[in-house]
Image 1 (cartoon, rainbow, N blue to C red):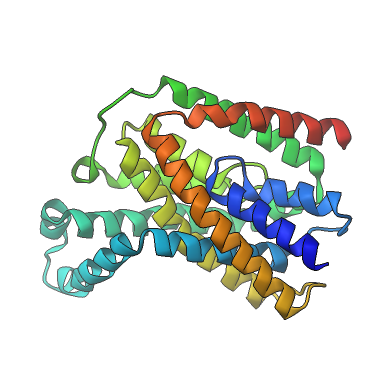
Image 2: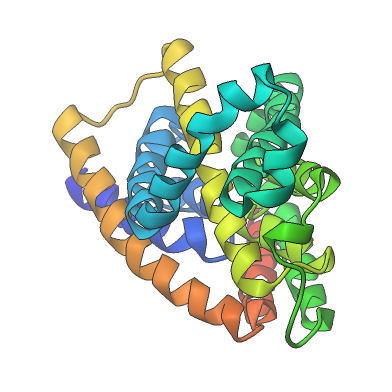
Amino acid sequence: MLLVILALGVVQGLCEFLPVSSSGHLVLAQALFGLGEPEVLLDLVLHLGTLLAVCVFYRKSLGELIVELRLLPAALFRGKMSEYFRTLPVFRLGILIIVACVPTAVMGLVGRDFLESLFNSTRAVGVSLLITAAVLALTGLAPARGGRRVGTMTLLDAALIGAAQGLAIAPGLSRSGLTIACALFLGLERGLAARFSFLLSIPAIVGGLALSLGSGQTSSAGPGHLFLGLVAAAAVGYKALVFLNAVVDRGRLWAFAPWCVLAGAAAVLSS
């Protein structure tokens, strides 16, 4: 069982940040290892490992956001929201992340049961992976260089990216792929597209973990095995995050489309 958990941790670490859908690959991997119905708690523990990776990688940005968002109560009560949003880039980024969380949360709460039911269908995962492939391929049409920065990013931009993240609750739809692609389609600068996507993943993963714990999910794996899976996901996830940022900066997100096509076709044909 330990080797299976470690293997799943590696799969999670690679696929959480690479735009190939970690949830989709975990469903396929758990089926391959004969675990029966996918274990939601195990899936979320592995997601917690990649949460640690993104927090470490973006620790500077997180620290700046925490400091800047301390101005939020004063901004609300003193009528300074518009001024701070316009003049303070880090404060603006924090507000945009909060706004993006709203459609994600609404879609997650309203459609959670249906979307999570897809975890039991390899065919559904395969179709979703093919959709992910199409979205990634289209990023090849995004502008080669330049793009809008935080100062020109709007509340509508944030809401649309948050909606893209909400759709990615379905296994096979890549969270990083859909959110980064959406940001690029909106004309955002590549580095900002990646940073916004991964910072946005933090509250999404925390919220998902809280919902899972609240619903009393269990796992056949013991606490020690789960911890080792978390460590594996965190270590591999950090390396994958470094790699993907370089890929996005070069404008080659589309290069992951063929893998999604192969994985999606294999899942559909084997179901």
